[in-house]
Length: 292
Image (tube, rainbow, N blue to C red):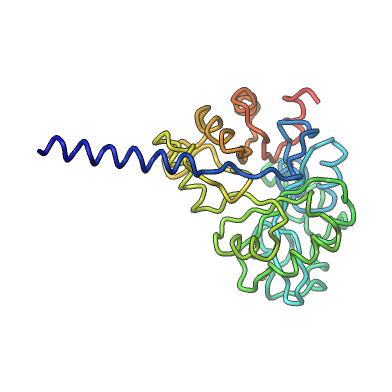
């Protein structure tokens, strides 16, 4: 009797899994990942912060001139509701100023030297100090590079950026050029509801779920609501990037774009595994590795 009961339970589990598999759907197609792009994509993290002062127009212009495929940036909102580019919540680490971006106006930010603390040699020299590099707005980037693909990360803020961000994307007709990312699940969920036509990557909880499913060989049961997995090589002691992970993602029509890859040997390994992009502070090195 016990054996028969277990057989029934296992049969029901098998049927449930089959139903999940048959009803699961891969990620939809989106023009952001155009077929004619040169894969794997070179994604210049902060414009290439390992080579130039990150998040500045200077860095993005140099990255574009280098021939990268995608410009990556982080957005915050000012006290007067302007979207600006900076990695941190404060200006302290990168500029000659101090304070929270969200409590400062654009006029306040434009007075700062955005390259003041950038150094190529761990603080020995600061070659771009006093060169007029200022805090950059998202609108300035849209105006300067209307044909470039961009990854734009929504950073942690008290004030929601969703509506002004979506409005700006639509105003500059960047819906097919922008992919939105965020470590903050609620902000990304909010953006998806406001701007459903714009591509986005996985939220933190979604990434965790997919990684764990692939470890159990159940990635094919997942129906993603996103287009890209932008992930580190490992997280919390768990190895994320493996050939099997890349295969599982591709089965779900998901792009795999690991970060932040600054080592030539690692770049070559990941390219061999078939990743769709390399998010890197060294776009110059990535271009060399790819022979471009």
